[in-house]
Image (cartoon, rainbow, N blue to C red; front, side, top):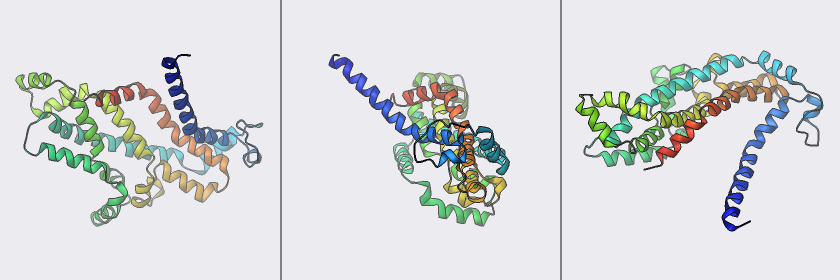
Length: 275
């Protein structure tokens, strides 16, 4: 094998090894959700159970915890956040990419700076603000803090930089307003980037445990991670079969969504890095 063929082979081997390491906990979670209690605590590693316990584990998870309610809450919260983020990010990114005005460069620097601020750093001020407004323990408390996504603005701005200025100028000559250009011209061209951002946004907020733990107390408002944690504390305990079954049910929508959107996701990431 020549050096020209050896390097790609080594690169693919490294990527496959890294992918296996990343996916190993998920394989173990699924395997545990299929096992009876006697096989979960064996000293030896057994990937496939001798006796399948699928119906018992998944039925226990669905009966002991309102997983359907948790999934519905996760859907409401993540979709609401994503829609609001797109409504804010697209006009802001268009202004930073295609409009000329004093201070544009400084505003973009502030956007980049905002990416560096972790959400935990502003959790206490947000909690106090929502307490004063009386919005705690509601869907609004779960959605509103994430309406503005500086990462979304950055990603959309990078994509809009690849759109030819002639396209924008032609739309202006046709009498379309700047906001009209955003929604009728830029949005259709940015579907790959929006899809890529949607994957990041949905995964991040579907898996968010920190803020929902602070913002809500009612079980009817629990998001999937918070619901699984409550299920473990109140019902499952050390009964890891139903617990892993609940975790598998919770992450299944994310896996399905990513598999359906993976081509658009890759296109969006590739295109936003062109300029």
